[in-house]
Amino acid sequence: MAAAAAVAAKGPRRGRRASADTKAVPAPAGRTAALAPAEIEEVFRRFAAANPEPVGELHYINAFTLLVAVVLSAQATDAGVNKATPALFALADTPARMVALGEERVRDLIKTIGLYRGKARNLIALSQRLLAAHGGKVPRSREALEELPGVGRKTANVVLNIAFGEATIAVDTHLFRVSNRIPLAPGRTPLAVELGLEAVVPTSYKLHAHHWLILHGRYICKARKPDCWRCLIDDICRFTPKTPPPGEGRAPAR
Ligand code: SF4
Image 1 (cartoon, rainbow, N blue to C red):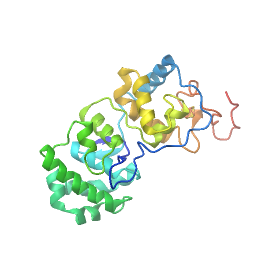
Image 2 (cartoon, protein in one colour):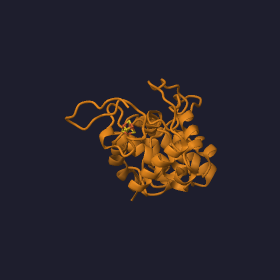
Image 3 (cartoon, helix red, strand yellow):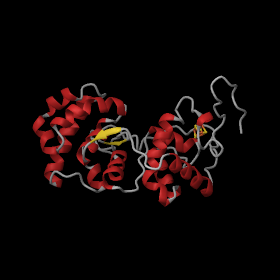
Image 4 (cartoon, helix red, strand yellow):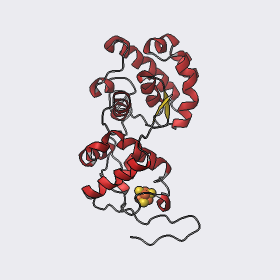
């Protein structure tokens, strides 16, 4: 089973909640200038050396189930989604099977995931749309993906990257934080960070950039207290104060 890491977000369409992609986000405190190009190259060189083929953590079995998993992961953990999806995918691994399963049954299968009622409704609606407009296939087009119920820019970026090998950068909460902390491409919104990263991440690292940064944010550069003492880019990152090893005093600001 392949895997992917991502969090879905909705676009600001009629009748839908505002997207994390477009919502204004408080400016990170203590902004400093972004790293120089040579430093950014070194950051990704180290990420690539440590993890040459990064994969995320959402389980899926084809492009459709990847899309479903990413939609389900909005405001939910990948682990929580992965607990529910085996039973769902066993019954509905194509849009036609999802529609045949019906909203009530889908709702029951994903009820352990946050916002499951709306997500069940979206899964049926997006499956119907895939059947009606795309021959039951997941489209390789940002515009077509963002037209699907429950799919915003971030979800589209994840699907384009993982299912179709396009060098898109999906900005979730981890990536947003990490990019502003280091800083790689500081920005006040996920979209600003995405476009900033598009501009500064070296081409050879773009395909895997979002995976490296999401995993780094999830496990090392954590929200409340980053593990700077075991970070492989701590000598490049400009965030201060750095977190010292457990049991040691706080490191002096650099
Ligand atoms: S040094 Fe600390 S703040 Fe900087 S990227 Fe590493 S974990 Fe994050």
